[in-house]
Length: 373
Ligand code: CO8
Image (cartoon, rainbow, N blue to C red; front, side):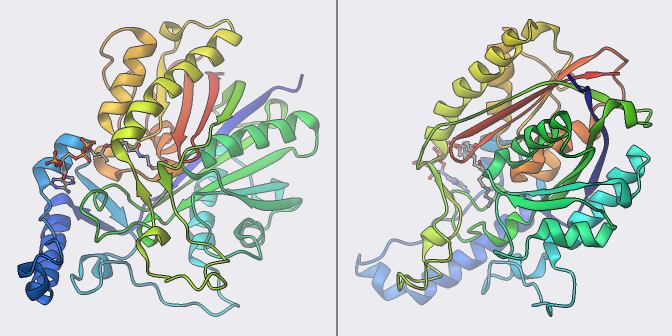
């Protein structure tokens, strides 16, 4: 079987940071404005007041300290509470493709490849800017790649699901060098006016180069030993935004047209699902969970990651075993586990085993077992 490696990674980090203190200040200003506007209805008991948010809650419940965003001003404007992006003409590169191409160029440089050597581009993310033409094809053009490209969406598991498609394509000989990008502009589909989830997400874009081991020249190669994907239907993470909204005569600004979740239920259901998935995948490869040097896990909640690793290795594992990037980046949907891999793999010696694992909406779980060459 053709040996396949991850030979380069890239990371686009947006220019603006929002701290929890700034976020809570904006949310509480929004709440005060709304409560003032609806004071009569609130006094009459017809409407519940908006309860303020708190930095302490956010840090204790999630582990998130701050997040990067492409536009800060719109998000923190209490009369707006979502980012402001200028509409671009059709002859200008789209925002998703622009940050995708930026991360892609970094991954190409790390892998020692040119855009022209890429023959498959996967744009894998939790939301797409438009239906068509595919952002992947726009990125293909921007970097001068050949072959073909397409967009794919498996929410927070988009990157690991794309990794399996890339590995299979290289093994089957339908591609030699695959670029995966995960442009996650979560700020555009997060409901910043909802206290239960306004702190959760951040913007970012990651990129990976996946290629035949016999063509790879990078000093930093990770052989893919196996990939395993699973899905199981759940309504606990949902977004009803879609192309049929107009025909349904539904309100485009209704709460269900942005991200919403049942955070407690997800926590309870997804932790055992992810741990069992990883354990089963490792067992199929004859690997004990304790033999894995590093777990690069999906970054949604610090407690979730601690519990997944504890179920696997039977003890509290520190950040050396399962690095956290959540404190700095928040949840970046499909990019989270890839940021963890990008930032925390260089110190490991040849032969080290690692697992990249995502879990999220669908539900979906994807794991990729790798070994440093
Ligand atoms: N400030 C102060 N208090 C608050 C706040 C706040 N901001 N929010 C809630 N509270 C209060 C609640 O009102 C509640 O009060 P009470 O006990 O009086 O009723 C109390 O705090 C506890 O609330 P919760 O039970 O909701 O709090 P939790 O401890 O469960 O923490 C979390 C909430 C952090 C959301 C936690 O449940 C969690 O992280 N769960 C897992 C979430 C997760 O993994 N989600 C995955 C979603 S992402 C994904 O898969 C990708 C989707 C596609 C991307 C979309 C991009 C936009």
